[in-house]
Image 1 (cartoon, rainbow, N blue to C red):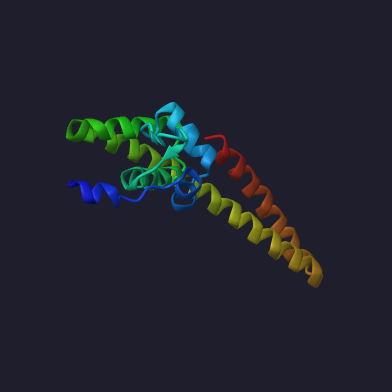
Image 2: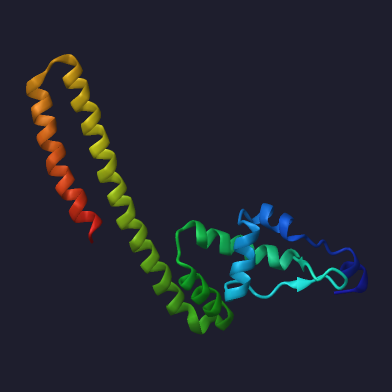
Length: 155
């Protein structure tokens, strides 16, 4: 890199980095303190964090990992594995496959909750229409679904 490109290289404050990454400044500080993200340069005179484009790239993919619900511990492991390169590929795959399985379980639970709400809408619509037979049937379906939701939540 030549001197002219260093002089024109854009830097960002923590507030700007937070806005660009979608992560709160407090989260950026926390992630740095526990090693999820690499230590950030400090301004010579102010001592404040100074983010560059490379830092923002890292923040962007860490924000994406966070958005998937990946735990802080798993994010930290993912970053550490990334530094190891191809030798850690199998560990990265396992970590991400485990997260995909967690997300699938969450999606299944959400579908059950949506079914429950739909049943309750239908139940109260039947009650409003005076259709006691339908209301009784929907009430029984709701009770069965509650058992399924409880079972699903505990697994």
